[in-house]
Image (cartoon, rainbow, N blue to C red; front, side, top):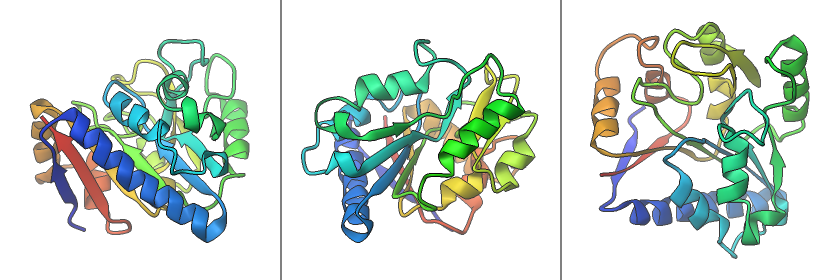
Length: 232
């Protein structure tokens, strides 16, 4: 399935446009089912988008559940926590009334018991997301689908909803939604910024093994239309 690429002149313009598209998906879900579910990525890129989306007053935030595409296995007090970033940058003002479902469920390692607790919480979510926003690393990873990940095959082919994964480039052990679960969404977005990330994207769009650049699994799937948001 060919992805749609949208390019913007600035990070501010991108954040505004992405927030509008995501808000539309959330509002459609609320209108159709009385609720909406949003899965977002962490890292340094989405801060402006989080701020733009979180201040929107045209969303009934009390009917929205927010979760993460993936998470480092760290407590929310850690400055490495994606949950802390989302709470700080997005779940403020109007969005403070949204319900947040974390992926980290306690303990030093994402052992079987920890992942079982996480999956039990995620099983309470509706079967489809309304919007999923992915990022991409300079190594071609997305979510926590890292090259060399010890459970990469399971993350890309399993039903999940979530699996633990460890990889040389991941730092801490992580937990990630499976690809199958992330593709079950009304809106699928890839948010990248900068010339370096554009070069990584173009390399990922070329021939080559998925295991070398796991974002290829998203680019090559034919289940859910993908929109790529990019700016310099």
